[in-house]
Amino acid sequence: MYEELFCGLGADLRATIVPMSHDRHQEMVLIKDIDFFSVCEHHLVPFSGKAHDAYIPSENGHITRLSGLARLVRVAAARPQLQERITSEVADALQEALRPLGTFVLIEAEHLCMSRPPFMPPTNTFFRSQPHAPAGPALPLVA
Image 1 (cartoon, rainbow, N blue to C red):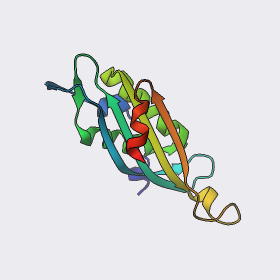
Image 2: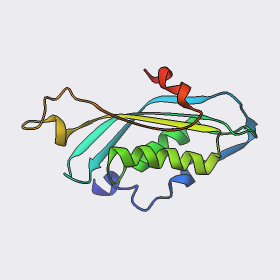
Image 3: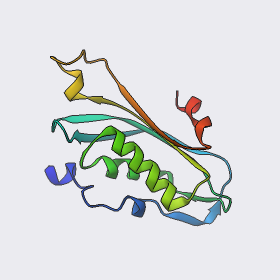
């Protein structure tokens, strides 16, 4: 079980993003509601949620498979993590692998370390976004 939980340790996140050489695209690419599960590195308790990834392809139009975007989130989360770090690691890996004109990553998650007594009621969700301009227009699309 721990091997699966932490299979992202040491993984190269850029390797999960493979540009599709035969396809070109110029409009924003967005995938919403990517389920993920991780373990808080501070408290060693689970947190889980949904990630939303968007990018505007580079001028050469390189895109990747949507499954690769989902895999990127899940591999980044599969290690002791912070929500903020998952967000920036996903955005940075997209930026490095595809060189898009812009990226946007939004992660919403429930942290058991913060949502169970004695901390807070279990209805709190925490958000973290990492835009690499000009992908800011993606924000209304994930609401």
